[in-house]
Amino acid sequence: MNTPKTYHRRGEPGGPGCPVGVLAVSVRSQTGGPETAELLDAGPDATETELLRTVASRLGVQWGHDEFGWWAAMKGNDFPSWAVWRQDDSGNKFLVEANLTEQQAQSLAAGFEAKGHKQTYWCTNEKIVS
Image (cartoon, rainbow, N blue to C red; front, side, top):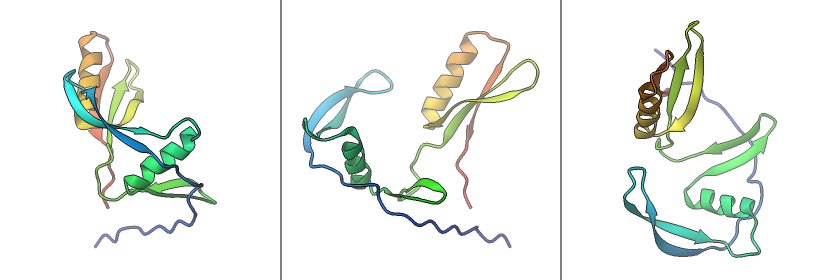
């Protein structure tokens, strides 16, 4: 029987967030069409880091820092985990880009393949499920 590994991480969040105003906007989707989104406005006095902390906390991300470095824990399994890989003529494999949705990965690989290079491109789901 395979027992999942258990890891313990200590640490505290890196600091304060900031108040934000929320404005409904329309943005361009990956397919080029309009898509509804929300613009978060932190105002002129907030820093980029404070805004990122606020966004992360609203998404349910818990983060901290310990002797192993920075870490983030997210609820659910929705973080994009697809990657695009390339193999050259000598058989060497290289990561092209990671943390993509499946659609983004397939589109990126297809774009490279369409250019007619000798290299091979493929997608993998890199999510590790224990």
